[in-house]
Length: 441
Image 1: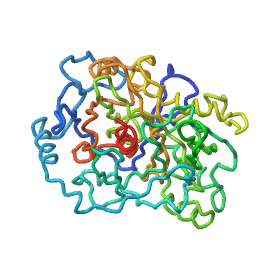
Image 2: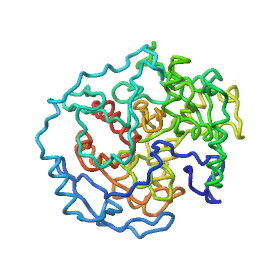
Image 3: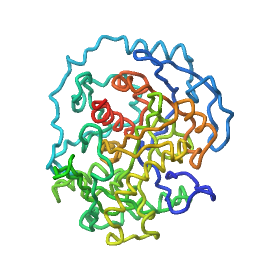
């Protein structure tokens, strides 16, 4: 479930309303824009069909792989012409190429502090700008020989990139401690409580829920094949998230954290999210158009995702660090992304592979909140996935359409009209997929 959405009575208890914070908008409203499906390497094909009404069953349309394409004007031909225009444009990226940013290597501590470049928060009102976004942010160079240069979007930054192919669950450990919780705000946390009470008056259906907080991550070599990733985690809550990351004072809190503690995230809740680059058997990646009923990024395009839940391991509103063994926390992290895929896309669990961790991306529109991005392979084709999705699932109300993009088109997705419609979490997942999973194929 998402903040701002009434929880149906028959949904699974204990998962919390803070189910999918992978992408958070500014308070501005957003109009939905059409959907794109890449049907061949250079030119995405746009297919229109009847959009799904959230929470209701639509009969599957066997002739289409894309649900919903709502635009004010133009239609499929106009959208296709614009995308052709963009993809046929001469590649001028070398003109504005910046120096590559080094990728954290084995044995390095990746800390969410001032050593990571601070990126400006960008209003969602700017999402209609032309792209590709050249000359902004960091330049990312892929490790594979056929991977083109990609410019980092200012809405997202990469905290951690895993080795090519990604990390399985057995190569990830977690350490929980109160030392990894956020610091109390200067002058106390009264401001957080005031923001929460104000939100409850406007949205009385909201409720608080505990979440894991990412403090830092260390990727180090071991005696076994492949490195080991250590996640240092604290505990936080949805209430603290609204009062810090999503507060109007978030930028000031980051500056103050850097000054007081040498860590610009010190005062922020930073609940750790999960997201999935979900691949079908016929080599498409799956995206979802978010419903207008959700409070976070309504109408934008996202990857399936949500949050690992401390309550899944320790029921109750106030779990303790000592009651959350690291091994079980890691298992919840990996299993939660599978659960989110099943709930949002409505595919059977047995059709999904074990997740591979691609890395950790940070949403700079919500003050650097982190999300662990995974690669998951589905044994179903895109048409089979579409039919499962259209039949509805536990979280069908959270999206209105499904989008399939060919894997081979992912390297150039930033050059299409679909890119400005993506949530920061989806952008982070794409960057990591291209750098980690894409480079290994």
